[in-house]
Image 1 (tube, rainbow, N blue to C red):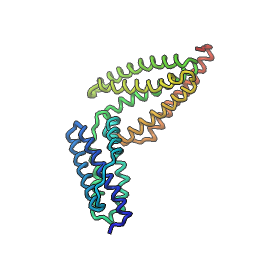
Image 2 (cartoon, rainbow, N blue to C red):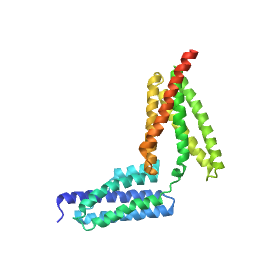
Image 3 (tube, one colour):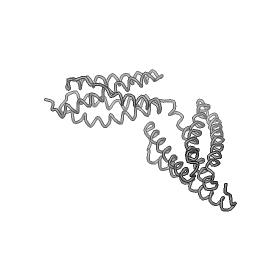
Image 4 (cartoon, one colour):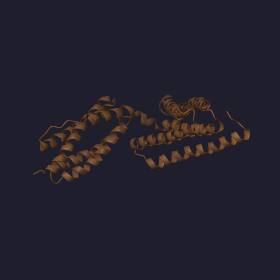
Amino acid sequence: MVTEEIKKIIKQMQKNEITEYYIYTRIARRLKNERDREILKKIATQEKAHAEIWGKYTGVKVKPSKIKIFFYRLLSALLGYTFTLKILERGEDKAQKNYSVLIGEIPEAEKIIKEESEHEHELISMLNEERLNYVGSIVLGLNDALVELSGALAGLSFALSDSRIISLTGLITGIAASLSMAASEYLSAKAEGRENPLKSALYTGVAYIITVGILILPFILFAGNRRLALGVMLFSVIFIIFVFNFYISVAKDLSFKKRFFQMSAISLGVALISFAIGLLVKGAFGIDV
C-alpha cells in the first residue's frame, strides 16, 4: 500500500519525467547531427515511459511544466545544447535521491534509477557541439580583452577626468586590438593546421569586441562620475569571468574555482597596476583632461 507521502513524491517525479520528455524532444528537433538526435529521442522515450510508470501509482495524468520547458529551450538557444543538457542532468542526479527512497515501495524504481544513471554517460559520449571546439579561441579573445582593456580603462580613468574621452579612447583601442587578435588567431590556427582558421579568428574577434562593449558601457552610462563608472566596470569584469567560467566548467567538466580565481586575479592585478601608472602619469606630466 502506497502512503500519501510516497504518492506525493511519485506525483512530483511523474511531472518531472513528462517535462523532461518534452525538453529532450524539443532539443532533439534542433540538432543537425543524426546520431545525437537519435540518442536524445531514445532518452526522451525513456522519460515518457518513466512518467507512465509513475502514473500507474498516482492514478492521474499530470501536465508538464511549461515554464521549465520554455526555460530550457531558451537556454539551449542562447548557450547551446551541451550546457543545457548537462544542467538538466545535474537536476536528474538530485532526483535520484528521491528514487532511492522509493526502491522499497515501488518495484520499478530500481530499473528507473539504472536507466537514469545511463543518461549521463550517453550524453557525454554524444556531445560534440561546434562552439565548444572553439573554446580556446573564445578564451583568447575574452581573456585578452578583460586584461588589456580593464587595465587600460583603469589607467585612463585616473589619468583623464572626462569619461567621454575615456570611453572613446577605450573603444578605439578595443576595436584595433580585436582586429589584431583575430588576425593573429587566424595566422596561428593556419600555421598549426587547425580546421577552419577563419572561424577560429571570428570567435576570437567577436568575444573580444563583445567584452569591449560591456567594459566601455559604464563610462557612457555614468559619464558624469568616472569613479562610479570604474567601479561598475570592475564589477562587470568579475561578472563576465564568473559567467564564462561557470559555462565552461559545466560544458567541459572543468574546475570552476581554479579558473575563476586565476582569471580574476590576473585581470584585477593588471587593473591595480594600471591605477598606479595612471596616477604617476597624471602627476608627472600634470595632465588634466
